[in-house]
Each structure stands twice: as C-alpha cells, then as structure tokens.
Image: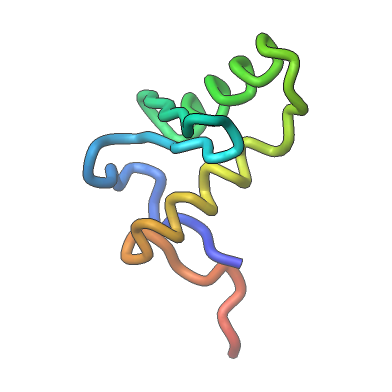
Length: 77
C-alpha cells in the first residue's frame, strides 16, 4: 500500500481527483486531499450514489497518477 510522502506536496494541477465511476468522468478540486475527499463524498451523497471510500480513492488516484509523490507505507526491512 502506498501513502503520500507528505500531504503538503501539491501535484500538477493542484489537489484534485477524477471520479471515473460517473459518466462522463467528473473532476473534483480542493484545498487539500482531505477537502477533495469530503467534496467527493458530499457529491455522491447529494446525488444518491453509494459513498464508497473517497479518502482511499483519492490517495490511490494520487499514487497511480503521480507516483513520485508517494512511498510504501510498510517497506520491507
């Protein structure tokens, strides 16, 4: 499992997440990773969708698209 190296590193384009579970995909922007996850959750609930786990999804999105911003959570000894 990967985690951000530091939560203060801002990726290109700012703190954002593209939700590909919607058609068309929907982009969410915020002031931090936590605020992006909160916005995603609020949008899903407001639109009657299953909430999922936006906190994990946002970090997974970060690590998949900007791997230099992440590190292994439990590196081998």
